[in-house]
Every structure is written in C-alpha cells, then in structure tokens.
Image (cartoon, rainbow, N blue to C red; front, side):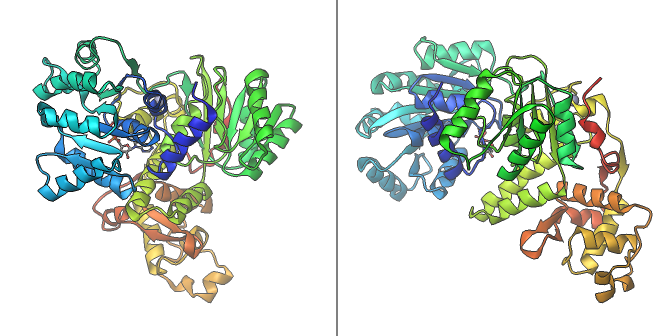
Length: 523
Ligand code: ADP
Ligand code: ZN
C-alpha cells in the first residue's frame, strides 16, 4: 500500500492542479502504480478519466513524460487545459507552426517541460528518440493503446514502434485503452511490453453488493440514529459536512449504546491515528467523520456508510460509499440530502477561486449527484451510466425495491418561476412559498406581494409540498440559490423552455411527503 505522505501528495495535486475533490473509481490505484514506476496496462470505460492517470503521475515524477496519442484535436485540448492549470505541457504534431515547435524544443532543452504529447507518426524518425533521450524522458504514456492491435478497427502502424522506443529509453510504460477484449489485451502486452506482463487494471465500476439509498433530510439525527440502530454491532462510517456534526452525532450514538468516535481535520494527528487504528481492529465501531477519513483506511468489513449531509460530488459519493463492503458481502448505504445541502454545495462552488469554466464544470458535477438523489429510476444504473457503463436495473437500490411515484410538475414549476420573476428574483424559498400559498406575513404586506397575480395561485399544494418542489427545482438546476443574496433564487437557462411551455418536467411525488421512513432497514 502507498504511504500516507504519498497519498497526501497525489490528493494535493488532484485538488490543486485538476480541481477534483476525489478520484474516480479505479484512478487512484493506477496513479499509484504509475508513480511507483511500474509498467501498467489500464483498461477503463470511455469517460472514466484515463488522462488524469498519466497526467498526475507525470507531475509527481521527476523528468519528462511523453504521451503518445493518435488524435491531434484531443491532444491540443489536453495541452491547453494543462497549460491553463499552470502545467508545462506541449505537443508536437503536424499541425504545429514552426514557432510552436521552436518554443517546445527550447523548453525541452532547458528541461522545463513536464508533459510532451507526440503523434505516433513522429516515432518513424530516429530524431524523436534522440530528442527524448536528451530531454530526460522518464515515462512513456500511451493513450488508445488498442491502436497497436492489427486486428482492431483503429490500427495505427506507427504504434508498432512504441515498443522500440521503450527499449531505447529504458523507462516504464503506461498504456491506456477502453477496449477490454482479451485478444486485444494480449496483443498490447506482446507489442508494447515485449511480452512481459505489466501490472494490469481492469475493473468495471459496479459494486453490486453495496445497496444504494437516498432519503430527503427530515430530522438527520433521528434518521442516522435509526439507520445505525438497525445495524447495531456492525462497523460503519457516517460522513458529515462539518466537524461539529461529527462530534454531536458521535455523542448521540454513544448515548444510544453504540461505540462511536468522531474524526476530523481539526483533531491532533495522534488522535486521528488512534481512531484509524481502533476502526481497523475493533468490532462494530462507528466513526463519524468529515471527508478526511478513509484515505488511509482499508477495512474490508465495513458494513454500512451513511451520509448525514450530501457529498461534494458524484465522485466523492462513489468513493465514500465504496468504503463499505470491500469483502464483497452485502453492505448498506444511506445518503441524506435537503435544500440546505444544495445551498451549501452551490455556495462552495461559487466561493471557490476556480476559473469560471471550472466552476461551471463543478456545478455540472453537483447536478449529476443531485440528479441521482432525485432519481426516478434505478440509482445504480444512473451512477454507472455517469461513469460510462451501461447496465440493467440492479434490484439492490431503494428505487428498484420501491419504485418512485412521479407526477407532472410542469404547472407547479411554472407557477414557482412566475412568482420568482414577478418579484425580481430577489427572494428565497420561504417567501416564495408564502406568495404561492397566499400566506399573509409582515414581509408580504410590507412589499404588497399580496397584490401580485401569483399570490395564492398555488393553494392546491401544502407548504411542505412547495418546499419539495423548490428542492427538486434546485436539484434539476432549474433555479440556483445565490449565496451573496441570502439564498435568493435565480432562474437558469434550463428553466426557460418550461416557462415558455415548450417542455414538461416530471418530479418525484413520494419525496414530497417527508421520506424519513426510508431510513428504516429492509425487512
Ligand atoms: P477518458 O477516460 O474517456 O479519456 P477523460 O480523461 O477525458 O476520460 O475524462 C473524462 C471526464 O472526467 C473529463 O471531463 C474529466 O475532467 C473528468 N474527470 C476525470 N477524473 C475526474 C475526477 N477524479 N473527478 C471528477 N471528474 C473527473
Ligand atoms: Zn437499482
């Protein structure tokens, strides 16, 4: 296993350079092996996040990493993204201007470049090998490695020269592909690794033994307590958004007769090591933790993971629930979410110093997690689809067990949007619900909002129901709370077609009734 400081370095690079809060499934193992200098063959589904698996090690290792990639457009995109993140990267392709080539050669001569993309055609010239040898090239990464297969659909004759380059440079090679059939794999091993099997990574993302469930946050303490009570004596982790919550929940669990500890970044090192050690050795300990917990922990028989608060992203969610059931035996999870979580996570994205397009990408990733929370069909299918895997309904998630009830929410959403727009998108959920349900309050009177045509147009739904409608609107990213204006809601582009009557929207009906009963265990 990789040591703690090394894990901290890779996580720091992940956050600082790439802006990600967690590794995608499978990435970390591959990254560790590549950094360690092993020959690696990694087979990952498309969209699984291959490029990070050679880009991050390139930064963690000494010297230059050369990346061989067949797609010029993709190469240029990746180089641009790396440069924007402050990484010294370049590409030598037939599309380069002489000036671009000059800049790259001089960066190479000075040893300034960390990542150099080259098109496979360049390998035909011995000048390339010599250049790489002079430039302290210490790692070769091969994207779309199946292009070396003569029987495949993407055969690139120049890929056959990669084996020679590896021999000439005497450095490790990491090969990546999404094509997993055994014949192609054998051919890659034969042609790129001269027949010596590399360390291979081939894993789908599915963890079928882990049950997936979400519940609307109602009384989180009660919900977590009843989830834990049904699993008494089993090892579990409760992930919390704040340090304070880890402590109050741990205390409440102790009072209910469980053994429980808090774990967070504010504790002394030795205290944290102690909790990690206890968790590893004691039977049935519950750790209430912030995200800091788990990196160095490898306990096979964690039977359950609960989220008292919504995780940061879909990647974090997957990684955190993935700490349950590593022994392959049934494991249970429950993730709570509510409007406050949505507000908190949106604000965290907005308040980060990331450039605008990365913030947009973070919002999009949050949207996918919220989509999973408000899903109408099998959760696993949706989760795996996000990671590029196609699957059937799983039979091991709350929505497979109890199908969601849905309703056509188009009319409700239009009323809600209209209440927002007529009040200048300046108010939060509470006031908007008062307008829709025609509730007289001081604020309504002061602003004469009882004079609005939308005042009272939503009396057919209760306040709780309207709150749930707004939460689902936030979850679908139809409206966004603005942290700088006390959570005032603004409409997004995605809401326009609904407002104009051009598209319809379906919401969950059952999560409108408070869903605290979902925290109960299965029969
Ligand atoms: P492929 O495996 O198809 O080459 P990419 O490397 O292009 O996939 O990554 C696919 C997408 O996943 C990209 O948008 C990338 O930004 C995103 N991604 C990769 N790793 C992570 C991560 N750890 N967290 C969040 N997003 C990630
Ligand atoms: Zn399912």
